[in-house]
Amino acid sequence: MFTRFRDRSEDALPTGTVVPFRAHRRPVLADVARRNDDDAPGANASSTPRFALLKEEDLRAVEGTYADGISAVQIVDVFTSRGIKFSEASFRKYVQQGLLPRSRRVGRKGKHRGSMGVYPAKTVRRINTVKSLMADGYTIEEIQGEFLHYTDLVEGVAEHLAELWTRISTDAVRLDPKAKRELDRELADAHRDGDRLVARLGDITRRVAAPRTDSLRLAGAAGGAEDLL
DNA sequence: CGGCTTTCCGACTGCATAAG
DNA sequence: CTTATGCAGTCGGAAAGCCG
Image (cartoon, rainbow, N blue to C red; front, side, top):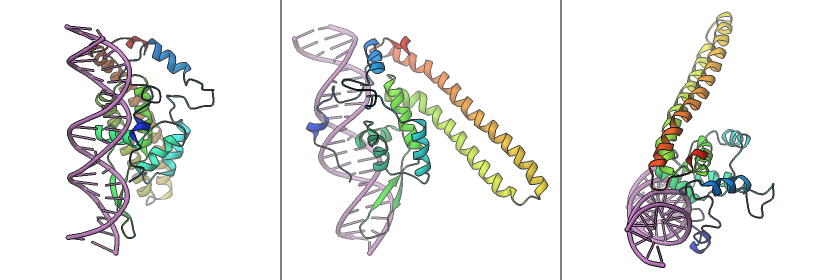
């Protein structure tokens, strides 16, 4: 296995110091303030903030590079190589909790090479979303129940649309040139509408989900400071 | 089937906070 | 102050998947 887990003395310990923002702690004023400046003690502008996330261009680059799938080790590396704290154990936890898609097993040629799990490239984006929500004080349970439920559905719509565009384009080559030009125009229109739809659904579901999680959180054992968000 | 690698499961740890 | 609760992260071992 990969580095199996590091010695506990290294990991467990500095909890509190090394561990990132403890999401289950509700984001009280002090935390919010800290998150804003923080990026942290002794940190200068160029160092990695405690709540650092991947940028959109990073996400696109990763999704392009690993379009055919990405291994667990590579996923963890995408974050750690950019100085973002994300352990393999946390990755497993997220998968276990249903926050991330399961892998598919792919055997490798050669003697005693075993098999390896391959995750869809979008997993990296998903992790980024999860980390962002956790930094906002949402618990894994809330994220799982309220956000990703919708995310899965919206992503499903986007994936089905992408599949549809591909198939239509493939089949369109059989048409005569005039008909194909006409269809290409309509397809481009439909494509734009589809993109807009997906973006709009994403926006709507975020708005629907947020208030529900707020009420969940207010009902929880430790309320407070929700109105900050 | 045996050997190997990787993934998953569930118990556990340690921290923060609330309640008594 | 002590105890209870909730949480994210960690660990050990079993299971899964593949190859020869």
